[in-house]
Image (cartoon, rainbow, N blue to C red; front, side, top):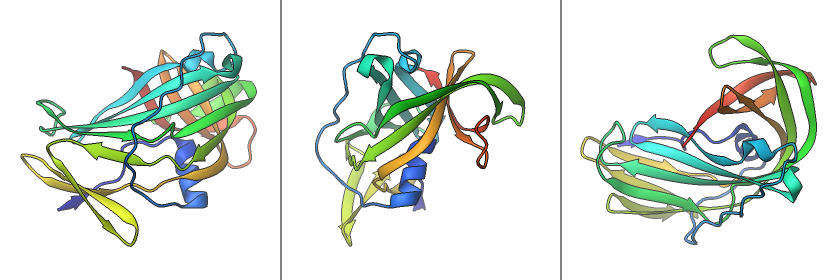
Length: 209
């Protein structure tokens, strides 16, 4: 069997997990915060985004603007397909008990330098946020999925036509600083380089669904 990690958690969630740890498992349906259509500094990030197909899976995030556009709520869904290129039937769907994180606007750095995933450095506006994760847990349902609990942690098993995958998803909680950027219609999660207030590097990239 092959073990994989969760496909593309945001830099904020990854930082929270690294800093605070957590458990796994869960059974309640996901909650999606209604979209705030106001025009605050974070409203432009609202929408449904994905990172494309990775192995059998597509991770989709729904970003909702709240608090007059000065805050965001990020919900997440993972869908696994029967074929490795994300074709055929959806055989497992994972949803979280609540948004995976909420983010509050700190400031906008209008003249940031950002190192892209390609290695190119660009000038861009970046919105810094304080992100908080409150321990949302995931539950998978579908014809390809089963689970076991060992030492309080849930391990998910997915049986596909070409392979079997096992996956343990950690729960993150706590707060950390991160940043969002829009460029050419794409959403980027970025993080500061060292202690620099103006230099950032892209952690992950999303396109609109």
